[in-house]
Length: 129
Image: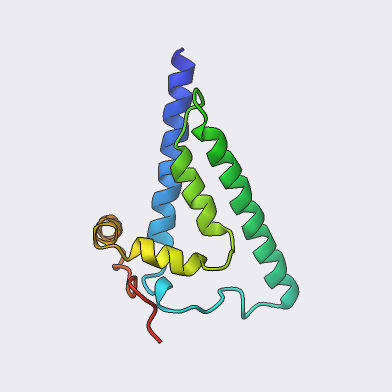
């Protein structure tokens, strides 16, 4: 029983750490442009990068679904959210900007970024052109 509690705490800590790292690693202007991050790379590198990112996203979503099952320790919903951010689908950026642009969520994210000496996120309500 003690190893189950230890596993739960370890998986919870790892998924929370992944979420925090994702938030603090984002450039402050991440939501200010719709530019594709892979656009300046060779086409083969660009497509392999996009494919790898999407495959990783789907694997993380599958792990999150598994962690959401009763009796399995871990942060399932948080893990699913991380996976969804990685996967490319139509309207994803608009959906993420709508969620991040909520004042309460944006305030919490920027407070977290300040703890790690990162500048606040800019343009979260709508991308500037």
